[in-house]
Amino acid sequence: MTHVVVVGAGQAGASAVARLRAKGFDGDITLIGEESHPPYQRPPLSKAYLLGELDRDRLYLRPESFYDENNITLKLGAPVSAIDPAAKTVTVGDETLSYDDLVLTTGSHPRRLPASIGGDLDGVLVVRGLANVDAMAPRFVTGSKVLIVGGGYIGLEAAAVAAKRGLDVTLVEMADRILQRVAAPETSAFFRQLHKTNGVDLREGVGLDHLIGENGAVTGAVLSDGTSLDVDFVLVGVGIEPDMRLAEAAGLRIENGIATDAFGRTSDPHIWAAGDCASFPWKDQQLRLESVGNAIDQAECVADNILGAETPYQAKPWFWSDQYDVKLQIAGLSTGYDHVVVRTGDGSVSHWYFDGDTLIAIDAMNDPRAYMVGKRLIDAGKSPDPKVVGDPDTDLKALLKA
Image (cartoon, rainbow, N blue to C red; front, side, top):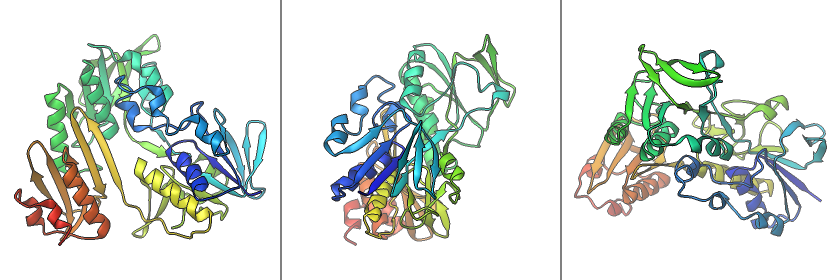
């Protein structure tokens, strides 16, 4: 009987196995995860879960019974040590599993600070998995001093949670502005003001020089401008890297992640990849997207193609971030924009990214209607007149009929 093995029990892995069964695959399926928990949502970890507003059981993507009911073998707490493409096997502990098709959904891991500047001190933390968040939660005590390194979405979300819990929050971003890599200056300005209004000491153009420790635990930090800070703990949010270790050791092609073709196949025709770890062809490059939407859509496309669909993956990027009482929704990719149209409403604002006359992305803050319209326009390849978009009297839904 045909056996599909999926390595990585996150959002992409869970989506792949569920799709295979939903599409009628009747062979064996094994889903292997390093963590001891069944597949769970990661975005709420640094927000609702850390705030204590979401119970652990509600993080799980599906009840554990789903896997039994669908005859999916779930191997948890079981890191894979090797792949043998020639023999078509994976090694899990002392066990060797044969596969007909292998799907790598190994995700990503957070970048850490080097030990040479104090990155290995106790109290220097990253936000990634359940164990990370469970370990840091007791430190979120009113009045504690936290330094957050990195002004991307992970760092900003952590800052929002810390500020809401009454911590003394300092955030440093070595680039000229927060969100510089992923958003326009207009979006950076919006979130800069939001965090300052909520009491965050936000410092841009300032990096971390080194951390200070006593008895192996972090107690302070020296910034690149010479400033010294007393800290109780440090949260590091300086980005993530695709987990390519197994793929590299197996000799698969690597290019901005585990390189796949348009169908999700790697350089080995019996090995596929999806999610944070995988890159795919897009505008003469190998694009890698770090989002829940991509993990789901790409994994489902791979599952369909394992079953013979031969459907190219068509990315429709969307992202979100929750900070304080602001919900940011993003559609499209802003890379290559040359101007931004700002649209304001009653308690809402949206930033529309144009490349010439072509709409390529939208950032919508507390504006679900603008997000919905913008996403549908981008998906359909339609571009409204920028002047019409910026006119507050324009009925956005009417743009969909134009």
